[in-house]
Image 1: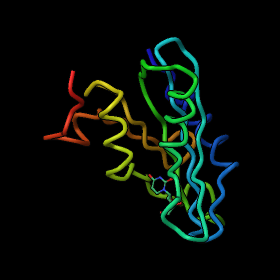
Image 2: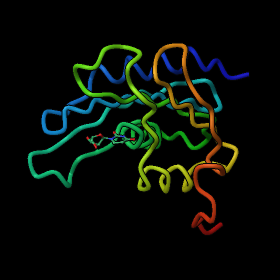
Image 3: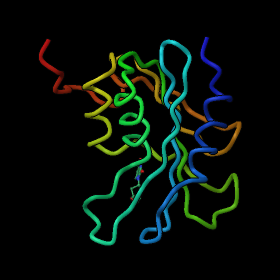
Amino acid sequence: MIDYKMLVNEAYEGQKMAYAPYSNWVVGAALLTKSGKIYRGCNIESATFSPTNCAERTAFFKAISEGERDFVAIAIVGNAKDAEMGTADVCPPCGVCRQVMAEFCNLDFEIVLAKSYDDYQVYTLGELMPLVSLPIK
Ligand code: THU
């Protein structure tokens, strides 16, 4: 059983590291591996915009570069930098991040979208990405 609350909490910890001086939209992610390890991520922006990396991909690339290949769930939180806790809506992953998830995860991979520490919705990758281009096996 996945401890969603714990994973959301980890995503908020990741969000504290966000580097988002251009959009002021701070995002955090926490990626849970099958072995129980958690990799946090934050968004990292650039003055030239296109090198910007989303929080989700930061978490995935940290994990993949450490040899992880089996993933269970990711929690994602995002809000304007000065927003008060509880006022945010969910921050669904962008198409590029969904494609990275599809590369490394099964369609039952769980995506936890949180608005606050105890208000979250759980989706599967299959729900968020139908008709997906899957990796060649
Ligand atoms: N961003 C994420 O990190 N994850 C998402 O799911 C949506 C968007 C980042 C990218 C950029 O730094 C900022 O949020 C505004 O789009």
